Image (tube, rainbow, N blue to C red):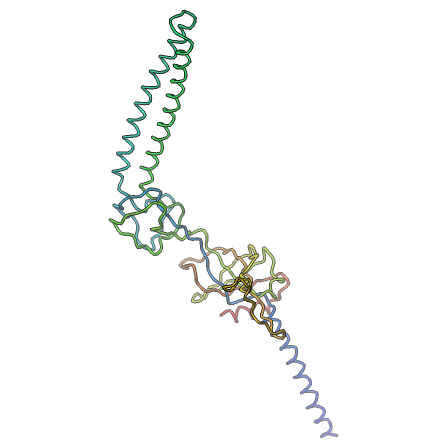
Amino acid sequence: MIPFRAHWGRILLTLSMLACAIVLGRHLWDYYMNAPWTRDGRVRADVVRIAPEVSGTITEIAVVDNQFVRRGDVLYQIDPERFQLALQQAQANLDAKRQALQLRQSTARRRTELEGSGAETAESIEQAGSDATVARAEYRNATAALDVAKLNLERTTVRAPVDGYVTNLNLRSGNYAAAGSNPISLVDANSFRILGYFQETQVSRIHVGDPVEIRLMGFHTPLNGQVESFGRGIADGNTAGDHLGLPSVDPVFNWVRLAQRIPVRIRIGQLPDGLILASGMTASVYVQAASDGNSSRTAARGEAK
């Protein structure tokens, strides 16, 4: 009886171990394939490309590379001399147009007062009124030209439009800044976020507003975040045409189907002191859905490390 019991004991032990392996394997498969977490996360931020609105020689640069600047801080100065002269010219032209307007209005008024006396013809009265109207339009045009000259002079001082960090600064005093060019860029300090690229099989488990745990490579302290939105489109290489305009469709094996990755935008919560964020950093993210258990969250934290 003893050998028989030992034999059945080994069988039961083997079956128990097999059942545990099946349960564990299914759990691992569900965790790796379907759980809403990914190592493919990136820190992103908006880059503001600052182009001058006027052209001229740069006389002064007020910032250095990687410097943090506030909105309204001076970045660099374009030589204002030409624009000061243009402003003086516009002011002189406005003064001349003002005098011409006053003269033509006075002439039109006098001729109108003489209407019916026979001293002025109807044609001359009408012509005087027309001249006054033209002078009024020319005066308004000169006023607008003066405002443009003032604006151009003001825009010779280029200022930061947002709070951010000067990046990849290659500007030097004496360079010529052309209107519409991009000599300086700012990384918007208030636009940092995480883009997590989740497999399409995981997206159904993610909802807007779900809390997110974020781990940056090189930083041990996890960050908190929240799902903000989903990307609504990714590129399809099959739509690109060849030299004949025909679609280049890749061959696909029916028994091999790779899940596409969908970008999910994640808002970052409170940042700890001393943490340096840079666009392009790598992040591991795990969406902590309300239905997740503590054990799966703990496993995700260990895996993210």
